Image 1 (cartoon, helix red, strand yellow):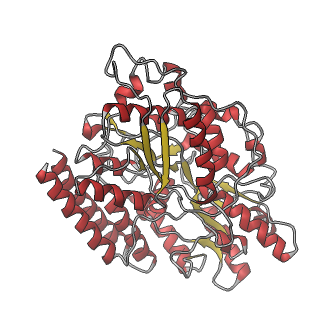
Image 2: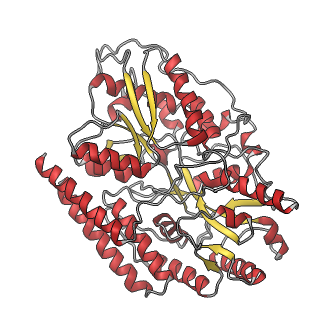
Image 3: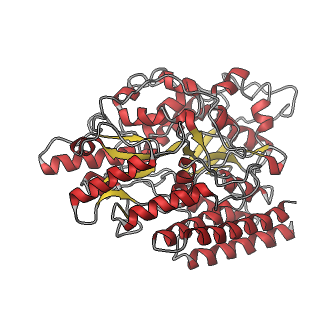
Length: 529
């Protein structure tokens, strides 16, 4: 344990030096948060959501469970956490949230025989703020009042994923106990488990008394359900999926029609042509595509060009393949031709500029949908003109089908005692029921992780058309790495992306990035072994 703690502290120091070297860049959370929006990241209301193109479909059919996924089920760290957009109080949700389990009779056999969760108090460090946090409190209070075990959950916002990671790391390093429930990404889970800080959820999921039924397990999208199973830790399930977001391309449909296009781009060539035409129309260095250089954008464009950022066996990085070279070449050419541009403020979000017609395309998390809706509506109000129609679509791709970067944090149980751990699991089980997920999706704007949840959303999908457009892309889900080194590597990916756009030689930059990333992974794997 002493050796592990030594490595842990050493890694924290290395991470701090890397952040300083990159100008303070940490794991970015680029989802759009407009300065004008009054509340938290949530699903857009009908009143503020602009109508999408008439050709867009909004089917509520459950998505396929055979979506292509990465072998190691990786995930991005870019889903938004701090936000200020309106919450819909009126979006229909069928059904009521049920307490789980239906009773609190103790197990008489199995791994949890005699373990009593009655009366346990659970602290949950989560990442939600503003109006989303307030409505989350209502859901949690519902559980506290209705669960038959008398469990009480105290949901405490920590601001964002980075803050939670720092707090958990500090607790582990100091030999202190983090909260019984925390949230974070899959690569965070591997880092925490270097010190055996997390509970393997497989025994809970499979328990005949407290676990999930066979039908429940099948109801989770297979790609999400297996995402937190970690081969390097003997296939322990170190987290559980409450929700997901997706990397999408935002487009101004009205502006595209004015330029002579009836649909958004599906190929990189179409994307470049449309962006350059919009830039020429503005004639002031804006109008095209707002560049984003974080790791999730890096990964998304590599996927769009048919590649991956992992080796075939999923154990190491592949950040310098021809797919990434081609993607970076496209974006660099667009920047050189003034068809793509960075915002002047690196910390700014794209949605205000998108709404003001400074860009015909922007890219980001689907959790940014309510922000775009708010800003589009505000722009129309200020101009006195009808609101532009807008929508979301897949990242333009070279293959027949898209390959969408889907990501999201998991809830994790930290090692406490058998009674607290069981109580925490019972809350997680309740929070991921279809009934609760349906309410949470309306509050948060996230996607569900269970197929049957869509059946409970009533007219919500039809009334929130852009959300429906994004949901239809879930069958094409793909993920970023869950590798233990990915938090640090993400920062290097961002730095390399930015350097390329600024003129660095593409292949040489990517080769150096890949070498550095592989070395970091190899070093951390020594500690695991």
